[in-house]
Length: 114
Length: 113
Image (cartoon, rainbow over all chains, first blue to last red; front, side):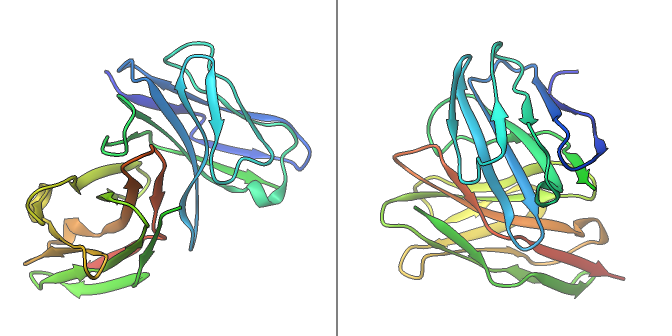
């Protein structure tokens, strides 16, 4: 089925380890986004991408790395995980530039850093 | 940058009662406004959005919201809620000159029988 998928859905890791969260969309949307969701903060933008090989920082980018070699994939890497990165991570996509565009969200990845 | 305040973190309500979830925003330019809903263990999905025109916006599942520019508000309402409306609701704002969407902290709506 078409849509946006994330993997894994749940991940437990240890402090200092590298972990990559995957995001895949089948709509060929230009824009993709990574958010983290924390109690009391709602969703905060980590990184976004306007197209393949074009990425930019969001509100809370420190400690994260992204890449986008193909339009449909937008992996998020925590190079050295910390406990403060325990969160639920959502990937989203949008068809075009413009704040009027709806964003379509994946089901989320719940990450626990011990 | 724009910001969003959702005034209630939790709203309990009985089934078939009306509900209003409050949202205020701050921005120095014109904005677009959104309400998203998140059911347990799922991603967010769009309920409704205000882009321009009529200030009363109707969305899915019987929800509606009213844009009030003078009060910088975009409150969400439903005249009669169902158990199935139990979810987390997020208000979001984006400015007309960029693609940066900011979300509120969310309001957990619990509908009781």
